[in-house]
Length: 269
Image (cartoon, rainbow, N blue to C red; front, side, top):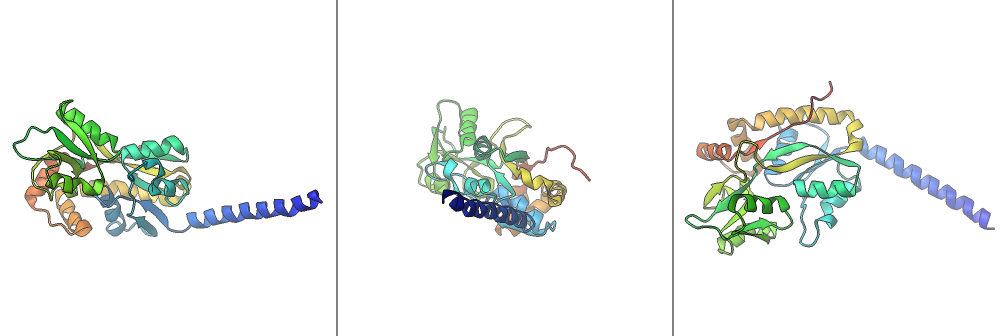
């Protein structure tokens, strides 16, 4: 009797596995799913889709990488690990955490430099700098710029402007598009021409076999070159966030060393 029971169970499991494989192949042939933050890190994806015409894309901007308790249980990393994303723009800390847990992903390239800037209260020697919770690379920025006498204070990302406004901290490390709207002195996150990597591009390795991946890489490289042009940058910030940058603000952006990058080897085709 046990043998007869085992046969239909085994058949059911085989059918389920086949359906799952078929579903995954169908999803791969559907839209390319890209996870991107809704700050400076996501601007190049917005540009690539809307200006460069990378078609058949579903961009998901609700890509919060750092929840209150544990970034390892964040919905973004869960979505990546369950094949809901083909590509993602991620903070280096979140990308490192993902790759440690899931070998199906790899970092393609750093993609943004110096987009987390420091905004300081004028005339103060900073004692406390607000950083986004769990963003270790922002804590390193504070240590490198201000030394051990200045504390990095973890704050929920959405609460950083409020903490600054209420004088709970003397300054903050904040995304450039947010920081440019805040009063105070603006500093780059790192000295020297190398800069500080603030976002990286991550790919699901299985997507690398899709011909659309090569198309993406070519268009991404073109988009990097475009967005490092001040005139294109001004127009894209207006379209992306409805913010009208002045020529002076664009010049400050350049002086802060904020730039798109693309450092992988030459692509095929």
